[in-house]
Image (cartoon, rainbow, N blue to C red):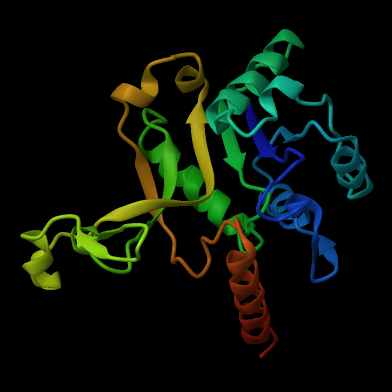
Length: 233
C-alpha cells in the first residue's frame, strides 16, 4: 500500500496563499496532484491541510481530503517529518496501513509522473532500507562559502579550502526536493534520522525547483514556459 502526502498548510509567509496561487491557469498544487495521479503508484493521495479553502479547491480538482490537519501541526515551527508521521498514524487509526509513504511538495510544478516512478524504482532497488531524497549538485563548491556580516563584509568560511581548485574538490549535493520516499518502519522509528543514510536520485536543478519565494516563482515560470515550448516543437 502506497500513500502520497502533499503537505499544504495555510498561512505561508513568503508568498501569501502560495499553494493555491494561479500558475498558468491552475492552482499551484494542481501540478503535484497531477503527477501523483498520473504515476498510478498510489492507493491514496492525501493533501494534508488545515485550510477549508485549500480543501475545497483540492476537492474541486477531483481529489478527496479525508481529514484536516491538526492546527497544532500547522504553525511556523512544526517540521515536515512530524506532519508526515501524524498523517501516517492517523490513517493507521482509521484502519489503513501504508508500507510506502511519499511526501510530494505542493509547489513543485515541474515535477512529473516519470520522476515519481523512477524514484520508486530506485527505492525498491535498495529494498526500501533507507529513505529516498532528490538531490542536485551545488553550483559551486561549498568549500568556497562565505559568511556575510551586517556591514556586508564577506568572510571566508574556510580560508584554506578557498584556495583549492574546483577540480580538486569533491562534488557535494543538497536535497532539492520535490519529493521524498519513506517506508513505514522509518516513520515508526523516532531515531531513524540520526542513524539513517539516504538513497538519492539526481535531478537537474532546473526541474527540481520547489517554490519558496517570489524569486523561485519567477524562475519556475520561465522554466515551465521553456519546457512547454520544447514539447510543442
